[in-house]
Image (cartoon, rainbow, N blue to C red; front, side, top):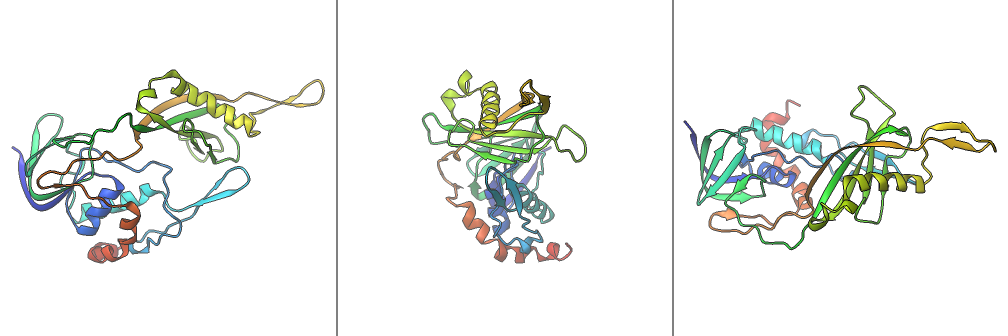
Length: 294
């Protein structure tokens, strides 16, 4: 037997922007899968998050010739917002809903087997959901995708570099991080290569996972990075082993948020994340009964 919920206003989506909007307006939020921010997306270090009892700790990244400063990972803010919305009873299905269908003023939620609930609403704020049908997307010709290639270093992963920024769209950024494959604190780093690739090029070998791995090594060697020391040559010149890498996985997402068409009671807010973040302090007052215990 499915449940029926009646809300005046409801939010569909689980991006950081969707959670900020739901948090500030104290609205219920429904989603089919959590859309966590990218692991290496950071907030501005000047942003004050004390209203959420979060310390915007500065993170320092060594690159060539300078040290870059970022704030708290966006993922931590995302988790804190979802936590408070859950405490406030504004995440009615948690992770139980696996697909949704919009039908006039009703959201039909289902799991893998059957319908689990219906939501009747007067206004729905739609921020996007991969498994929601019933919304029309404005067509974009050959959209750009952000591809994340996760690459393991089997040799040559010990170095001081944390970040490389390039001018090309293919292999545009490289984030080095302590390997998740090795338990405990480890000096061995793996890499996440970020590329911007047109949809029509994603299956092209020149933009494949293999080429991303080859280009990563080439860019590292061009910048003077070397593998493990391998003794001295006949002339006394130091020798180094080549980097040895393995591709772990590739994930991707749209570079730009899809442009959805509004209709009836479905609204698509035209809001910027930066503006929502500025309004956080005034919104936290409504959650004082939770915040005072932190």
